[in-house]
Length: 113
Image (cartoon, rainbow, N blue to C red; front, side, top):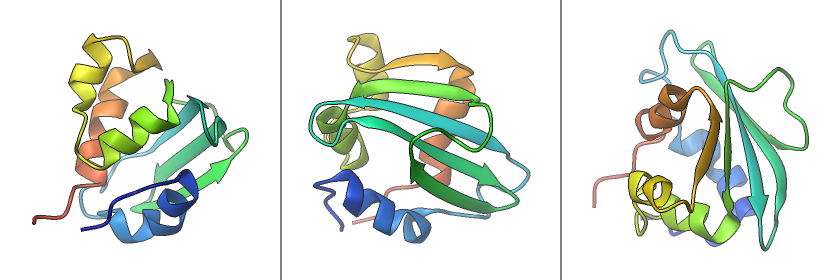
C-alpha cells in the first residue's frame, strides 16, 4: 500500500487512486488551504467521472474548502488520522458543503490490505 509522504506524491498518484464509478453523476470542486511544509492552495475537481488536481486557484468556485496542515492531510490519506476525529478536534476545518468533503472517501477509497 502507498504511504504518502508529500503532496507532490499525492498529485502524481491521484488518478490511480480515483474510483470513477464511485463518482458517477458527481461534480464538485474541493479547495485545500494547507499550512506547514508544502503549504498553499490546491484544488481537486471531480466531474464526468474524471478528476483533476492542481496548485493555486481552482478552475471553478469551490463546493467546499478544507483547511488543515499538510502533515495532518497526509495522515488522513495514509489512514493514521480519522477525518471525522480531525474535524471534531479542530485539526481540519471546512467552509462550504460538508457532504462534498465526505465524498472524498468514496471517490478515493483506501486499497484493501
